Each structure stands twice: as structure tokens, then as C-alpha cells.
Length: 271
Ligand SMILES: Nc1nc2c(ncn2[C@@H]2O[C@H](COP(=O)(O)OP(=O)(O)O)[C@@H](O)[C@H]2O)c(=O)[nH]1
Ligand SMILES: [Mg+2]
Image 1: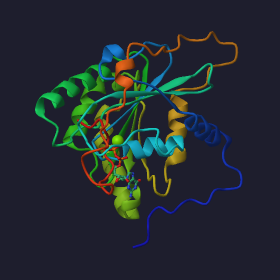
Image 2 (image 1 turned 180 degrees about the horizontal axis):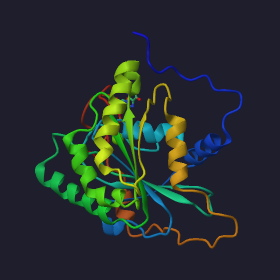
Image 3 (image 1 turned 60 degrees about the horizontal axis):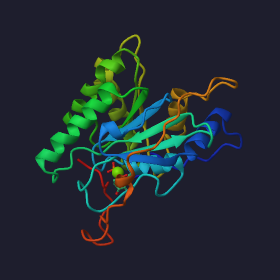
Image 4 (image 1 turned 180 degrees about the vertical axis):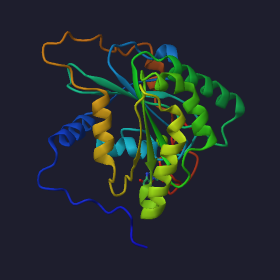
């Protein structure tokens, strides 16, 4: 079968807006990690949350966006620990946005109590996190939005409907679909999201492939649009300060025991 998404040949002149957005994403760097909402630092910058079912391709998409192989962690022992990882974007001294990588959900082997605890953390985060500018939900293009994905969207739906929080559903692994299938799932997902759309809302869907980089320009541009650079001379907003999480920064030895080297990479933080 002809692959639906070939690596696009780059035009000699890349749209400067796209180039700026890709450069911004490339500057993403790890900031801090938290296992409780109270440990997330307060700040006045826009924050973008990345959510998705376990194995949807969230880590791969974040790493592709940032053009860094290991920015979003993967490990072979899913469900062992669950963290929200924060990344800083923008100039070193005056960052202009944060990305929050939330734990993957729907991993079957996680015990019920841990699942419920994390459902609550995510619900609280999505419903109440200050400065949440947008949510990027990674969804496997072969499956489309599942019941669990919709449940998660319910947590943030009122803020999306009011326009306070923007939403982009990223249909991942588009390289696995033919052109017709891809068009069909795109249409279906847009239809599914129709109920969230209001006059004030900003809800989008994009087909994406980390393999072919299809959709990468659109994804980066959309995220950058959600967090425009600070105008020159603007007062510096309150920046986040990492603190109180030092005990969480000790790395789990979670790559050592389960699965061989060929085991598929799975988030350390799936729930
Ligand atoms: N073909 C293809 N595979 C992908 C793509 N993105 C991720 N994958 C694969 O899907 C699996 C899960 O990806 P991962 O990023 O770890 O998912 P996460 O659990 O959502 O963080 C891995 O085996 C990836 O190599 C993609 O765009 N195309
Ligand atoms: Mg992951």
C-alpha cells in the first residue's frame, strides 16, 4: 500500500511563523516533576497540558516536537510511578510558557486504587489548574476518541466551552492509515468534538505522524499561537520556581527489571 504520509519535501522557504514555532518547541527543557498537585509551582505563564491514553504516542510526539530523543521519558515498567513533568519554553532567562506532560491513562495492569487516585489528580488539574491555556490530547488515529478519552475531556469541557482552555486532538500514528481512512477518522473526530464547540471555544483536530513528521508544523504552530511571545517591554510575569520536589527528582530504577531490551517503551507514568 502507498503510504499516505510521506516525509514532506521542505520548500526552500519555510514559513517564518512555522520556523519560529519549531524553534520555540526545540527549546523545551525539563523543569520539574510532581506527584501531587500541591507540588506544582504557581506561575503566570501559559501552560499546555499533554494528555493521552497509554501507548497513544504522547512521549514520541513530545520528543518529536522538541527534536529531542529523551525529553519525555519512556520506561519499560508502566504504572510504577505517576508524575506530572513540567517543561519550560522560551528564552532561558524569561521563559514564556510551560508544557505539562500528564500521566498516560487506561493502562490495564495498574491497580484500581492507583487509577482512581490519578483520575482525581488529572480531574483536579484539568478543572482547576491556573493558567491552563490549552490541552493537547493524543489519540491513536486507528481508534479515534475512546470512552476513556471522552471521560477525560469531560473534566475540562466547561473550560473548553467557555474558551478559557483551548483543545487540540492529535490523531497520532497517521502513517499507519491510508489516505481515505485518515480522512475518515479526521472527519469523525471533528464530528465527535462538535458538542464541545461553542462560539467562544477553540477546538481543533490534526493528523500527526512522528515517523513522517506529517502534521508537525501545524502542531507546533498551534501550540505557539496559544502562547504568544511576550511583547517587548512587557512586565515580566511571575515565573515558576521549582521547590519542595527534590525527593521526587531521585530517579526510579525502573528500567532494570521488567522486560528485555526489546520490550516496547512505555511511559513510566501510565495509569
Ligand atoms: N508508526 C508510528 N508509531 C508510533 C508513532 N508515535 C509513536 N509510535 C509508537 O507507539 C508506541 C507508543 O509510543 P509512546 O510515545 O511511548 O506512547 P505513550 O505511552 O503515549 O507515551 C511506541 O512503540 C512508538 O514507537 C508514529 O507516529 N508512528
Ligand atoms: Mg509516554
